[in-house]
Image 1: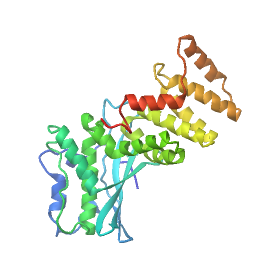
Image 2: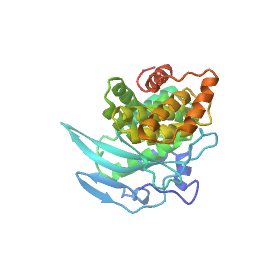
Image 3: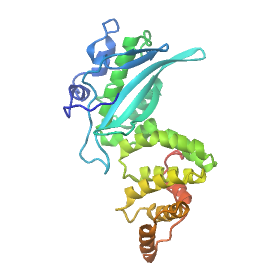
Amino acid sequence: MSFIRDSRISQSLKQALNTEEDVQDRFLAAEDEEFDTLSENLTLKIDNQEVVKPKTERNAVISLTGDNPGTRGVIFEVVKAEKVNEGRSSFVKYTLSVGSEGEIGKTPGIIEKRYSDFNDLNSKLRKRFPKEMEHISFPGKLVIRNFKDETIAQRSRAFEQYLTHLFTIDSVRFSDEFKDFLYQEKFKEGIESLQRGEFSHCVSIMEKYLPVQERLQGDQHSDVVCTLCVLSACHQKLSDQETALKYAESALSCVSNNQTSVFLAPLLSHTIYLCWLLGREKTHLETQLTGLRDKGVKPEELLSVILNYTRFNAIWYEEK
């Protein structure tokens, strides 16, 4: 359901950035009003019945100056909202698509959240960034009618605008709180699985959330390179050399112009080994690695570099 606007900044973005008007609260205040056109492009799944509504112009494409290399315009979109019964309690699960401008044939990142996850993020950000969050509205919790189709659709719309606004603030966008919400908490679980030798579980997590991380940080960020290295190392351990090589080559393409990257030499050595196993051409890689060795660089084992990197940067599995 992801789509790109013909207009770079749509009316919905203007609303999201309007500090004089509490847009989301306005969406949710009139509980008894009829479902308006702003919500008519959502797919809802309530009690196993899907309500598909026609698309209209809404989500804005966000593209900022000063982005990390490799980032592009980002689109946040709630593509499904589903009521979930869990024991005696019920909640709504929101499926959120994180896409990029101009993507063709590339799957958007998908995450699933409930209202309490959004509320927890909002509380943490307001505590850490009180000035930046002062004029950002958040949909309040309702005492009744939480599971009405209209309420869920309006709240979905409000969450899209909320994330859109957060993404425009660099200090918030690159904060641990925002990264934890989108993918980092799951990556901690993935790294712990890697340490335990549970490579299949690690792969399932990293492959699901890598697209989200790429869109937030850009595909040349060292954290993204680390994720690609994790996936290559895991697939090698699982004897899937073809996929391991694919991820290794992707990681190398991200650091090819960064001779100081801690991953470059280990990646070259790792990729050369995979090429040898698969009978692929590796002369150009060997030449590059020899050049690094002549400069005194000694390639370490890739898995050791991964774990040292995550530990040193206090990310993914080590709490600050």
